[in-house]
Image (tube, rainbow, N blue to C red; front, side, top):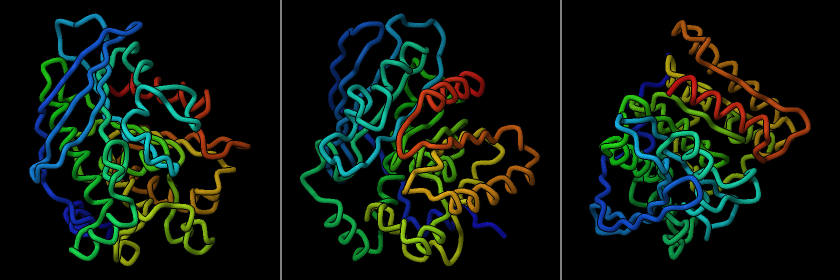
Length: 297
């Protein structure tokens, strides 16, 4: 029997948290509007966010996307990836998504962006010693960001998707697994069976943030991504990506596909593997993501 959402939340040490908006500045850019946001967590911690939206306001609530930023050892980037991009992306996704009609939000995850004053290993150790996980904190905060995004007057809460690359990809399908408010999830370059990663040594290419005690004793990535069924899911990988060896991807996908088959929703699962591609977004992936969200949101 596959792991339940409730049990997965327990392993992550998922917590219900909130993000309170304490500051916002908007500026009109070429074809879109950028909002620079400041949030406060219940413990008093501050979180930076960026939001992009269409320049022309609509009379109706529209679709929205929660964008989870990547890792790549670039702790200084964080949420600014949405408007400035990074080397593994074709370009900054925020302006592109705004011009396609989406309201898109991205927040700094713990130890990234303006929260990089605490290092990843320090935060991961502290969380574990307190019976929590850094990854669980990240997922919890993304769920809080989803709550805030869904409450905006220009967003239809029934049409919210989540996407990201690398660490952001992992956040995307874990969040979709534990939060059914995510209607569609599209993730790039970080989907693979964790047990196989350990067998091949590829797990050491991933960050400390992903350490969740006991996870592999009870479940697998394929099963977790399968919890998203019957909702729509797009999986993009490069066959030459050292972070996700083909054997690890194939094992995970077999389990996720089985979950969608059982849910009679196989048509909602889209798999895009690319030969000769490493850990980066490609034009084909970008086209697939935009087409996917246009169809399902």
